[in-house]
Length: 73
Image 1 (cartoon, helix red, strand yellow):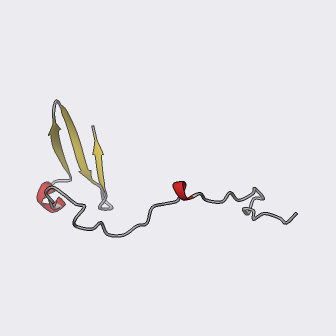
Image 2 (cartoon, one colour):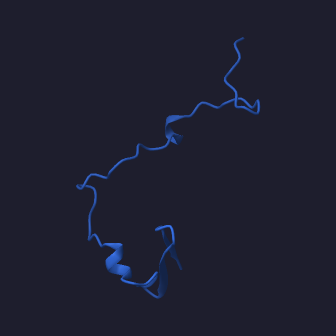
Image 3 (tube, rainbow, N blue to C red):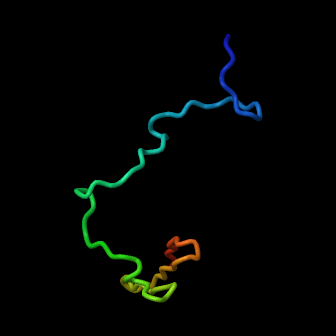
């Protein structure tokens, strides 16, 4: 019996099944995008955080120092 591929720590490598494989990445075609597009600079202005009212809940959208967005309830 042939040896199966293994990881550096000796564990056997499991083949990746198509249903668990990462989806292809790339730009989303414009036909799939719907709704309005807002620029984050227009939302934030000179602030680092904005509040978004959704129903009875208030969410906070924060701009991190690395330029990432974090949405919290």
